[in-house]
Structure formats: C-alpha cells, structure tokens
Amino acid sequence: MDDLDFSEVVPNIAITFVVMRFLMTYLETEKRLPHLHKILNFAWLWALILLAMSSVLGLKFINENYILLLSLVILYILDKSREMPITRMLAIAIIPYTVVSLINAIFELLTPKFHESNISIFASFKGFAITWLIGFSIYSQRQGKRERQQRLKDEEEKKKLEAKKQELEYQVAERTAELTRQKEELEQTVIELKTTQNQLVHAEKMASLGELTAGIAHEIQNPLNFVNNFSEVSVELCQEITEELEKENFDKTYIIEILSDLSQNQEKITHHGQRAASIVKGMLQHSRTSTGQKELTDINVLADEYIRLSYHGLRAKDKSFMADFKTNLDPNLPKIKIIPQDFGRVLLNVINNAFYAVQQKAKLKLDGYKPLVSIDTYLEDGEVVVKIKDNGTGMPESVKSKIFQPFFTTKPTGQGTGLGLSLAYDIITKGHGGTMEVDSVEGEWTVFIIKLPID
Image 1 (cartoon, rainbow, N blue to C red):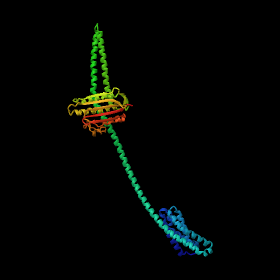
Image 2 (cartoon, helix red, strand yellow):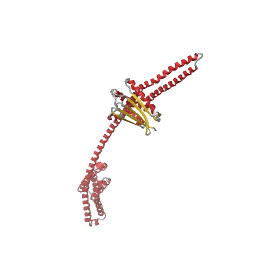
Image 3 (cartoon, one colour):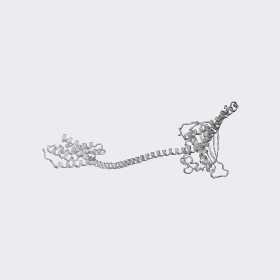
Image 4 (cartoon, helix red, strand yellow):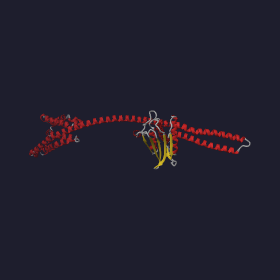
C-alpha cells in the first residue's frame, strides 16, 4: 500500500477538470444532456477518489494510464451524444491517441522488454497522436464554435419566425373575426334588402292595380248598363205578353214577335254579362299573386282589354284628358303559353307609360297635336311580336339607356316607383324567355317592342 502522491494526482485532476469543462461547454450538456451534466460537473471529485484508491491499493497501472482511461471516458461521453454533428470531429481527434495509448499500455504490460527496446517507435506514434489530438481538437473547437454561432443564429431566426407566425395567426384570427362580423352584417343587409324589395314590388303591383281598378270601373259600367236596360225592357215585354194572353182573342203573331224580342234581349244580356265577367276575371288575375304556371293565352284579347282599361283608368284621374287609341291585331295570331297575370302587368305598365307620355305632351298645347297610342300584334320569324307605340314626349339617349334599370323613373317624385319597367323587363326576358326593346325620338315618339317565342 503506497502513500498518495499529490505530484501525480493534482495534474491529473486539473486535466480532468479542464477537459470536462471543455466537454460541458463544447457539447452544451447543461441544455442538451442535463443528467450527464450533473455527473460531469463533479468529474474532478470522481477522479480524485479513483486516484486516491489506486494509490492506497497500489494500483500503479491506473495512475500511469490515467490519461488513457480519461480518453476512454471521453469517447463514452461522445458516444452518448453522437446525435450531435460536432461530436464526430472531436471523436476523430481523440480516437488515434486512445488507440495508440491503448496499444502502448498493452505492450508495456504484456511484453515489457519488446516495449522497452522499441520505446522510440511507441513514443513517435504517441507524439503523432498527441499532435493529431491537439490540432484536430483546435479545429473541432473552432468548427463547433461556428456551428454554435450558426445554431444560435438559426434559433434566433426561428424565434423571430415563431413570433412573426404568432403575430400573423393573431392577425388572421382578428381578420377572420372581422370578416365573420362583416359577413353577418351583409347577410342581415341582404335580408333587409330582400324585404324592402318585396315591399317595393308589392307597392308597384298595388299602384298598377289602382290604375287598373279605375279603368275597370268605367269599362264594367257599360255592360252593366246594357244588362240593366235590356232587363227592364224584357220585364215590360213579359207584362205585354201577360196582358195579351188575358184577352179572349189574343194575337198569336204579336206574342211571337214579343217572344222574339225577349230572346234577343236575353242574348244581349248574356253577351254583356260575359263581358262584365271577363273584365272582373281579368282584374282578379291581375291582382292575384302569380302562380308561375303558363297557360295558353290569346295575346290579342289581353292587348285589346288592357289598352281600354288603361285609357279609362287615366280618364278617371283626369277628366280633361282626351286621347285616341287604336289596335291592329293579327287575327291569325296563335295562342301561346304565358303567365297571364305577369304578362298583363307588363302590358298595363307599358300602356300606362304611353298614355302618360301623350298626356304630358298634350299639356304643352301644341298646334295640331292629337294624342295617340297604338298597339300592334303580328308574327315574325316564329315569334309573337307586340308593339306599343305613342306619339308623346319621347326620350333622349341618356334616358333610353337606363329605362330598364331598377328605381329609374322619369316621373316626378311620388308618381312612380321606378320598378315598373324593370319588373316588366325581367318578366319578359327571365320569366318568358323573350326580348323587350325600346326605341324613341325625343319629342316625337316612343315604341316598345316585345317578342315572345311560340314554343
């Protein structure tokens, strides 16, 4: 058992302390390998205990080959952190020294004479290994420093990118919330607009119905007057028959004549009653919500009926207004499938506008001016054409280009919704697959041309 030789122990412990501190810094064990870091932090203590025990027990081999043992420990530590690229270079630096030292120790232990006789060779190899160790250690340290700097730079960039990502995510979340709020507001606005649109369309329909009602009141009065008059005459004729039959020698020929007159009266009552019923039916169809069902319809009947109703409706509002209207309806025009209520609204709106235009021009009291509205129907290229023309105020190009736009009106405030022609255009083009065009010369005339496919 030997005494502890501090001249050998202290340098080895110092070397252990320096090497372990280098490894701890080089491998960043505190952050990467915290459990190993705690052990390496007290490596000098483990070295002191080992050296003390070897001296006490007389194990000179440990003291003499302590650096070899230390290099083996270092290789073990590097193996534990082999996933780090920088450990490879340090391992390359220390492996030659470890191998040479291990071979030297084996030969010294097993063949001391051979080792002693070739000590210079072993020393040369060991010197080369030490030079290699020092040179490559310095190189690996510099390389590791560059890698650490690059890693720190990458981590800093990563932190910046992460911060930027979080900021963008916050902005995206904020923007998404804003867009969601705007979407909800727009949806609410669309609902309100649809409600308003429905109200305006209803107002337009009611306005056209009001104009229609005035015309109907006048038109229906004529057949009712005829029905009343012929009914009264028929009652008188029946009384005459009764009186004649009460006579003993009644005149058979006279009774036959009275019966003939009664028959004619009944036919006229039936005719005018049907006429009144037709007008009422038209009014009901116009006021009824459209079912969207197309029916075979005689365009000529609608055209003739609505031009009369429109004129008398305007006359009911303004007794001083006088105008002429005429129809030129093709008797061979085939019936086509349309939605009668919707197409009736189109005719009424366009004809009302035509009478309004001639009424405004009549107010100018131009010499020789005679208000006239005409409606023509005919076949052209497999389509039914309805042409409504007036010799009223006409319209400039700026108005003509916007005439079918919603809410555009040339009438004074309160006299038009600006929806009539817009709805009429949609009914013809979208509802019936036809076309609706307008042509006009300012101060002279305006013509609307509606074309509907036969099929």
